[in-house]
Image (cartoon, rainbow, N blue to C red; front, side, top):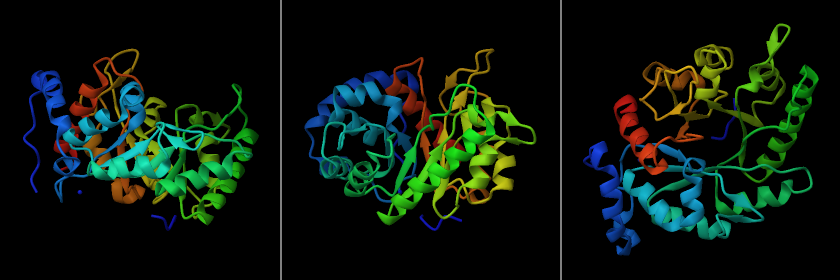
Length: 293
């Protein structure tokens, strides 16, 4: 098992008042960051910033201030490029997050062998605990051999990250559940990676989308899934993304398996939103308070 390894809840605004509240909150942006810091002991819920990527690109500081006001505690970045996070140095970005009462726990980044070490060094400078590879470049018609080679590559990255004091993980989609005789690509990745070097970030939507019960994998590989990504699934033929608690995935059941899975952090991540993404992350946060706490 990978060794690597917050009082009152704010009065929740009604959903119909959310956008109005968001507009009014711009008046609060002149407040001292000290006043925006999280209240000790508040519920811990994470957000993968890819969900609000356009807002992060347009105005990083104001967007993170709103994320903090909603109540999020843990953040996972998705804006690393060329030694910077959202156009800031690693230390500057971490300090901004800290000043707003949140913790930069993790980051998604892709890189090749040549750029690997600078990426790891920048993440170490940012103080993240986890670096996650969001998707491996597998051919369109993948083979079992492709997944075996990917597993070896994950081990190599994990070893390099461990030397920098960072835990390395892999985030799934649905293609990993393609079957090759008696096993899936995900089976191969799990079986052929070193638990001391590679953890798995279970995207629960994509696991369910692939027709898999997450409990099956939690039972087969207990302790390997230190992170979860949570987003819901519409009850529709398209099975589109939905806010947590607004779809068909039984999160109350799944969260009862957190200890078995090894989950230490979970992050709301909604790849695409039919509402304003800031409203979507508010709804997911509000519903997760009821599901988890």
